[in-house]
Amino acid sequence: MTDITFRHAQASDLPTIISMLADDDLGAKREDASLPVNQKYRTAFEAIDKDPNQYLAVVEQAEEIIGCLQLTFIPGLSRLGMWRGQIESVRIASSHRGSGLGSQMFEWAIAECRNRGCELVQLTTDKARPDALKFYGKLGFEASHEGMKLSLD
Amino acid sequence: MTDITFRHAQASDLPTIISMLADDDLGAKREDASLPVNQKYRTAFEAIDKDPNQYLAVVEQAEEIIGCLQLTFIPGLSRLGMWRGQIESVRIASSHRGSGLGSQMFEWAIAECRNRGCELVQLTTDKARPDALKFYGKLGFEASHEGMKLSLD
Image (cartoon, rainbow over all chains, first blue to last red; front, side, top):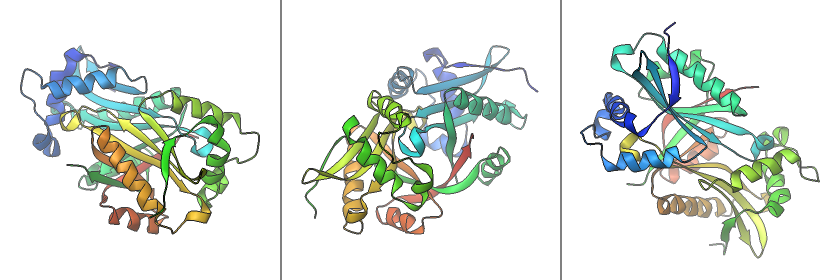
């Protein structure tokens, strides 16, 4: 087990987080890791930071950020007013992939959802990432649903 | 085209909304449509109602509620700080199914997401509902992702 800590992301973490988002086959085409940080990221960070149902987390080891993820806590009426926890934008620094860090991050994320009263945790995973699907299956997630996306470009 | 209007749900709409949630093969086992309204639904409604990134909508025709859906607007860093709109808990009164109302509700929901600055609309659909999958495909949604769920019971 790696000795890691989790905390809320701060604006000063943005360059590191964005470089992790960009360091990925799919992410490289979509992100802008140039400095100074693109204003679009700053605006988005403010919206996340002020929303108590968002938890953008960074994972640190020896004061270095080695991963990030975003939790969204969603209240709903169905299933007797069940809250859902949703996990999005999970990234691990390339130097730390394959170290078991992903499992630790998901254990933390699931526990955090439980603490917030969620009875279900959900995420979608791109069908182009078969390894991720296998990983989530091992954590107990079931691929019971289709994840449908509509781009509004 | 049916002449319908959309508005934010109010607490007084709960009995009608809950009866729609329960009037469904999967919903019948999960919901409690008894009166007075189960406190769990009231608590959940308050959480939804006070969160500016939730829009629980009812659809009316001649002052009768004939459908409901919930939109969640999710800020995120990835894809240059893109907002996502998420659609959940779509229900149509049994008397109005097959009338084209579903398409009208999704057109409204997608437009609402666009108004809120979302560049992507997403939802998950149970693989046990093949007709729903076909319906979403016609609206332009792509089944590009697996929808993974983990129950915390």
